[in-house]
Length: 224
Image 1 (cartoon, one colour):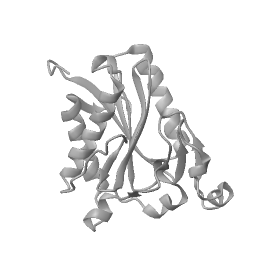
Image 2 (cartoon, rainbow, N blue to C red):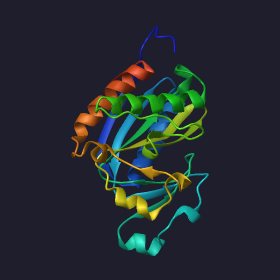
Image 3 (cartoon, rainbow, N blue to C red):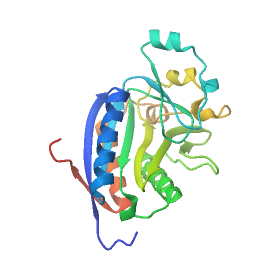
């Protein structure tokens, strides 16, 4: 990035939605960005309990029968993002940047590291020191993942994104081997701080760090 100008990113906050409803909106935004180019969105949401399995995932990392999960109102969805298996649910901030990387830097690894940097800086505002783990995607606090990242990039337009555990009920992760990694755990901001965290406060900090890291200006999306 040159820092010569700031790209505009439209911010969408939809609250708690089903995974399929969020996926439908993602596809709509992706189509718009792919056709118009040089337009960008950051879609922030929460999902009803759902386990998603990415392109490199396997049902072997699903530890509970789908029949039982259905009884517990936990959906299982196979999706076209990168990565393995993860959980989304209430108390977690899920971010879907739909961005034209031609306006930034056409490098997928660069984009992943930038997303990680946004999360690392956000956590630091809550006095949580986090880091990357070599060879793995996501953000970690020691041996526990606090933010999973899985993306898809087509024609340099991004989809999917990150899932930051804020006040997440971590017992949901007992149904899976998160990201297919069986020797590490998961954690959340509330677990690390010992307090329930104001989600809106986290979103405010996250959007601020997103603007700084990507050198963009975020503003509400039109008609949203």
